Image (cartoon, rainbow, N blue to C red; front, side, top):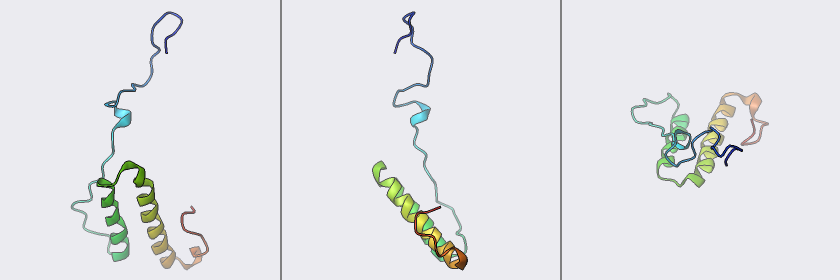
Length: 87
């Protein structure tokens, strides 16, 4: 989009190599665990993100989130009335 003087207004770069489009990678290597095997198993599922297409990431993250909420609900019985996926 050009301005009235023919120049392009400043703004964020839109090239595929711009920093705003960088992919954030999680490195789970070297984690010693939480001490709760259920939590460790849920967190380990984040490793699936590396091989999954970007469009599947929300579903994987949702599954991990839901599992962690289940474990938390087991530890805090007063929270068991919330449905999976609700804050």
